[in-house]
Image (cartoon, rainbow over all chains, first blue to last red; front, side):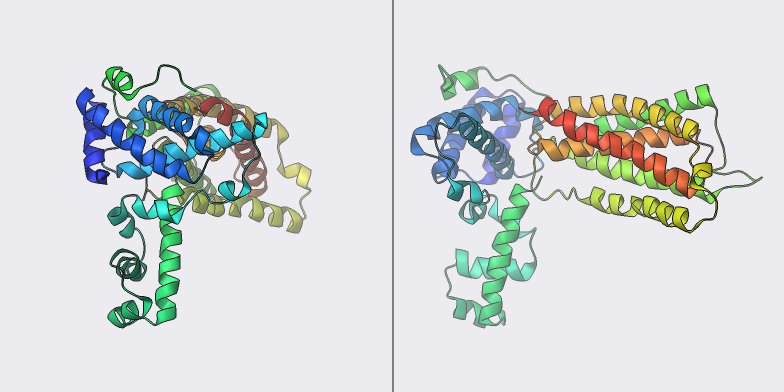
Length: 174
Length: 213
């Protein structure tokens, strides 16, 4: 199981001070996370290369991480940048056709939901966060969530949709 | 594919790093802007109509205030772009641009409505001087911002380039405005806007290729 955001942030803060053991642990966790992140975004035979390139970028740009902020969104920003760069290279060299479906949605809500979820919840309106918590995390049905929150069923659906969209946007935002 | 890659060797290469501090670079740029103003005043003179018992001109205060807000908002946004993060709102510059756009719009309306010939209100010699000094100072500021972005991890190079130009152009114009003797909205709307637009375009075209990583 992946370490939580606070643990990763602590490891990165230690790594910035030169703690090699903490950094090795962090790299291991990041490798797993990146493989999942990229899994649905690129061709399987390119996955390892892209993960390695991203880890090298993480290494080079480690001074740009601010330990007062969440770690995974920072990693996601680095990963997304490397991914877009990778797509650009692939497109230029015409080695493979650019997969329109992959290029269309850089802010996968499934990934968004995993990134510093609690912190992200603080950044969206309360009603949207509540609807997402009840239905997407606690597993309640729309009807149950509607009863518990006093929102109509359609409003619960709208709040989930808008909340997920907003969280995805906030991750991609710089 | 990176050769000889493994996590152990990457961890072994680790050395301590100094975290980026955006406040420090913003302070440095503020000092450089003040220095630029000092050079302009020393070379061209100071038109003090900001707070003058003999005749304070509100336009001096308005143009200075707008440039300061535009420069500060865009500078804050662009320096923050070196450090990707969630929850940091960096959209203030859009509102500052919207507010500043009132100046060229008002200038266009005033020019159309006025009976004074437009040519009499443009002072091209002063305008070119404005353009030269503002962009000269802006170049220095833009170079520092670019250096800062290269140290960080800007993930939207094009936007970072545009904002570099906007910040450098606004602060360069602010530095020059300490000398600028004109308070005519048509003059300010044309030359100040042109200067900032040129700086933005240069930033958009030049900076992205320098900050890619």
